[in-house]
Length: 440
Image (cartoon, rainbow, N blue to C red; front, side, top):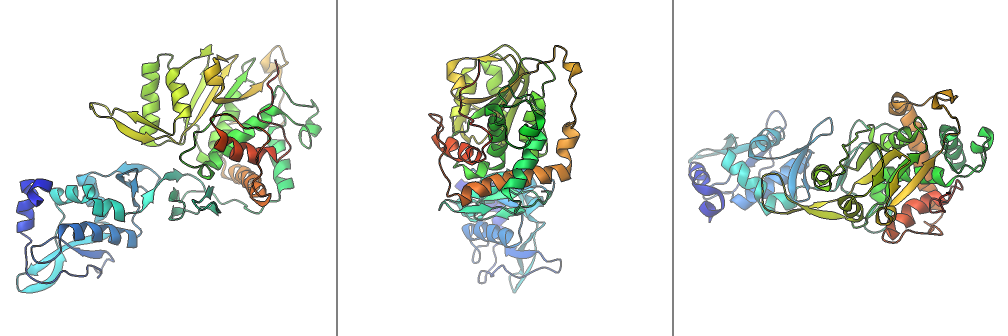
C-alpha cells in the first residue's frame, strides 16, 4: 500500500528508518524549542500517525500553515500566501518541528533526521495532515468584523482567528472600536462632502457635512462597508459590484474607488480590462486563483458588455482550467467588483448586478474646480487616516448590530443576503437610499 501511495523512493527511505520500539509521543522539544516528531518506522510510528502528528505539532507551535480550500498554504510575515510543495514544505515545517528517528536499534533516543522529498509529498497530500491543520477561509489586511456560523457578531484580531477562520496580518493598524455613531458620521461626511455626487440634496458644504443626503454617497458607503465587513457575508452569497461613473474627468471617481479598496486593504491594485471575454476571463481566473478580495477595473470607456463578468459577479464559485492542464478545478469566489469610467453604459443584465455611484462636475473646465481638502492615494494610505476611517466603518457595523440588524426597505433580486446586510448597515445612517432611483 505504501508503494502504491508514495512510490519506491519513499518505500526505500522508510526501510532505512525501520527500528524496533514503541512509537514516541513526539511532544518533547529540542534545545531551540522545536517540537520533535518521530518519523514513520516499521515497529513504531505509522505513516498516518506521522502526518497527523506533524499537523498537530505545527498547530501547537503556531506555525502559519493552513488548509486553504483543500490546499496547504504558508502565510509569510508580510502577508503573502505561499502554496506548499514538497520542497518549500520541508523548509517551512522545520522552522517549527524537528523530524526525528531512533539513534540505533538498541537506542530509542530520538535524533534529528532530515525530512526527504518523498515523505514531504506524502504528508502534504494526506487527509490526516489536511484535516488536522487549521482551515483558512480568508486573509485580511485589517482587523474586521465577522459573522460566525451561529449568527453571533465577532471582531477578528491579528493572526489566525479559529472562530471565523480568518487570518489578519500583523501589520494591521489599531483603531477605535468604540467611536460613537454621531462622531463617526460627522467624520465620514467631512471626508466626502466635496465629492460631486450627482444627487446631493444640497450644494451647501455645511449641510453636506451634517444632514444632506445622496443616493450615490450611500452607494459609495456600501462599497466601503462591503469590503470592510465582507466576513459578515456567508461564502454562499454573491456580492454586488460597484461602478463609479461621471460626466467628466477629474471628478474623483477613481479616488472614491481607491478609498473603498484602500481603507481595508491598504492598496489600490488595478487590473487590466479587456473587451474580449476570453482575455477578460483570464484576469478573473487570476482573481479566483489568488482568492483576491476585489477586482478593480479603472478608467473604462464605452459600453460595458461582458458575459463572463456577469457570471463572475453572480457566482460564489467557478470551475476554471489551470494553465497547461485539461482538468477543471472549482475555485471559491469572494471578490467584489469595482469599475470606474466616464459616461459608461451597460446592458440590463449587468446593471442588475451593480450599484452605480454617479458623479457630476458642473465646471466646464475640470481644472477650475477648487477643493478645500485635497485627498490623494498618500492621504488614504496614511495609517492615522485609515485608523479614523476604519473606526467610522466599525461604528456603522456596530450600530446595525445594536439595532437588532434591521432589513433595508429594498433589496436587489439575486443578492438578497448581501443587500440585507450591507445596505441594511448603510440605510440606518440616514445618508441616502443606495437602492433609490438613479436620476436621468
